[in-house]
Amino acid sequence: MPMTIEFSPTQQSALDLIQLERALQHQDSLLSLSHEKNLVVAKQIAGLLLEKKRPILMFGMGASHYANRVAESVYRSHGFQAFAVPLSEALYSAIPESDCVQLIVSQSGESGEAIRYLERAGSNAFGLTMNSQSTLARAVPSLIGVGGVERGFAATRSLMVTLVLHGCILEALGFEQTALRDLLASPKPIDHSSLQLALETLSAAKQLVFSGRAELQGIAEVSALHTAELARIPSLALEGGQFRHGPLELLEPGLGVVLLRAGGESAELTESLVKTCLAAGVKPILIDPSGSPEIAGAVQLRFPALQGLAAAVAVLPTLQELLLKFAAKRVEFVGQPRRSSKITGER
Image (cartoon, helix red, strand yellow):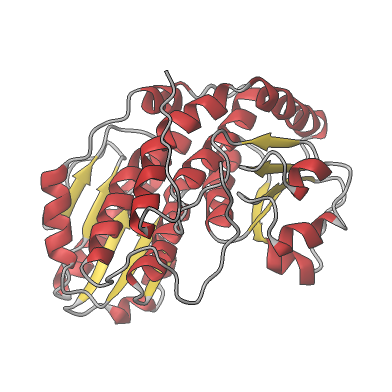
């Protein structure tokens, strides 16, 4: 039976709101993956993609863009041309859009950039949103995340649900998401002992660098965003190869490094990066759903061997917990923005 939690924003702290959203993320994601209306829209999208092997253009801001960055890698692994572009960039850049399938992703469905982009969206435009009554959902056929708009400041539930909405499209394209479904139905418990060791390792860090490859690079990017939002310290997200091309000069004791190790061909590239960090006096945290052997010297949080959306979803709860605890050591009111504004709404 679906969980329901009644709470009022005026009665809960910002951190409480984030934690309550997290408690619902697996349930709402699983329901979104099987929702009948989502299956109908996903089949429309799949039909257009399969008809001419059209490219996929995915537009979003913030965590929505980073969810698209995860999906971009997964679509490509299945032979599709897929490109994730910030909506703000799409508004001012000459991006070839004709004959492409356009996915406009906005958890609120009301972001200024999304509304402005709708003015130029073509006939092959679709939405992914958490708000069934939003401008986006009314303007174009849309996949709707179950549970309504997220009210916590950092994207947790909405991020996982958005990833799963891409899973609906992948299933409609003929790529089963069995591992993803199993993971949502029976979430794996967080390894709190390893998480505590990771937290202690990062405790003195004044800056963090997140680095991944393939589908986990989008998770590295959203993790850097959450660190800036919640802990209010500088954080970077660098694709593994990009980390090597100059930014290694950042390495010195006191820097926090979190490496996300994707499966497949790129998995073996992580070991040398770990060794480089250790040689510079930095003990990296390794988030590892690759199924590869352990790497000596890193603080490792290991997961079952997974790839694609399932790998991304598997590591999210642990990263959320790590970053929330990391932020709580630095910020008095975690999740209470001082300068940012995001559109949220009631369920």
